[in-house]
Image (cartoon, rainbow, N blue to C red):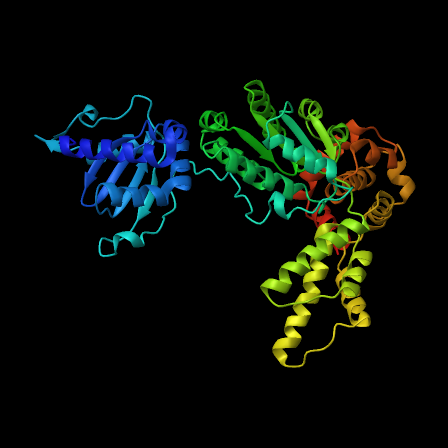
Length: 492
């Protein structure tokens, strides 16, 4: 049983948490915490759910440990325990009297059991109190949902041109809390969508420090949801997500085919919008085309109900502006000067995306630094710049067309192009169609209708063929090897 002194210490600690993090954060994360044990430099704290236990560990571990050391005294380890773990913990730790363990009521545990054990910090008692290091959570469901915001991607560092001016203004309006609660950015890869999402997140936290900002990438969203399903923690995941003030979702088009995750995201978007919260989403194509690539029609419609703004391919003027910004930073930071003529060559040749542009500039910078270190500094002449850019662009992936893909699939499967377009149902031909549809989905951004038109089929047949192709790729070694061969060929 806890002593009165220990309970008073924990009360002081919670007051300190409230002072440090503010009322909103305290009410969301710390208010329901309870002290379970304080012994031998180890504090065991109960959280209201296994999800919140691991989120507290992930978000506040360092601050909580430092605050305990400052307000209460030296501590070796702080653990967050929950629900099933709490029950096991009580059974293990309850003292024995007359050959029987005490009843579970001997330890004060909330009726709504937390369900997760998380060690905030774990260190040997011989270490100095300030040298603590985090330890990963043990057992149960550990969410991997939130992606960190990139500190370099802010509004101040975003170059504005005619290709992205409207998108920039729309992003600024989001943080100023205009009437648009749903904002959708769409455009090809490397045009600044991720930069704007991160910039919105940073600016929002600057203006509303106590708000919950959640930035989701495709991998984290999928992994977080799968983890919740496997650990039977979906209700807790939903309860956590409902506390979000602004949701930022990147690369929504990659969710095609992930039906359960799409449904969960749709419900989340509906709940947040109905509560007056803000949702910002980025994708590769317009909302009207998302459903054609396999995204949930209702989710595509919901996205289309907001402000949908394209981010166009950067023109020459914008590309020069980006390069000059990079050159100015390098001139003051690392003493590297790239002249205007070299920047002009890079801007004119690298017109595909901002990433390609930045990569080419960094290649010039790396070669200049290598020359300087070797003591054989060479002038960055026009011919040398062009040679380096040609080398850089040689790595540019070749655009995959559906016609090229159809021809290669037919050849690999020993068929003719007409076989794939025909109504024949022989197994080799059917497998060839499955392979074409599967590869078209993986290697291109073409909508289902466009894929189907190439082989004279409708979009529902294409979708079915993709599903069957995925099964065959996993169960049929010959089919799987051919798919892998074609994937490697086109990705090269």
